[in-house]
Image 1 (cartoon, rainbow, N blue to C red):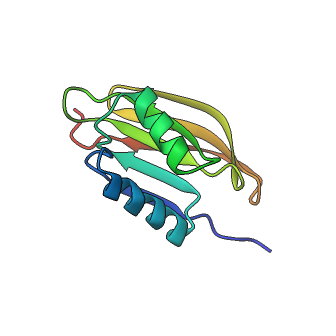
Image 2: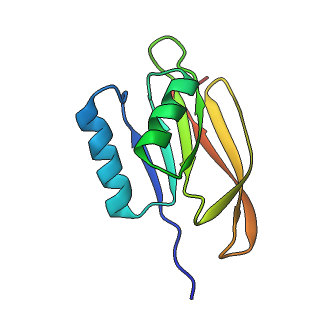
Length: 117
């Protein structure tokens, strides 16, 4: 049987607060999402990737650095549902090429920072 893919997008405005991290973890588990888009992570990409991978064990994340106090992004995938083929990005956008095994298709997913010119 085919199971739907659940995508979650969240403007988190930073994840330094432990309560916010716990809320994100709970929301991710309760929604059973397979792909997670985060905006305004307010961190460098290496810190946000380590933080998110510790929070959501087994997930794969790619992050984009903040530009000053805004513009940071992250994308996460649950590898039990999708396979990461590549990740890429530039200022204000972040993307992944993923293979959705249940559907047998490859797609590009892109997370864009809204105020980007």
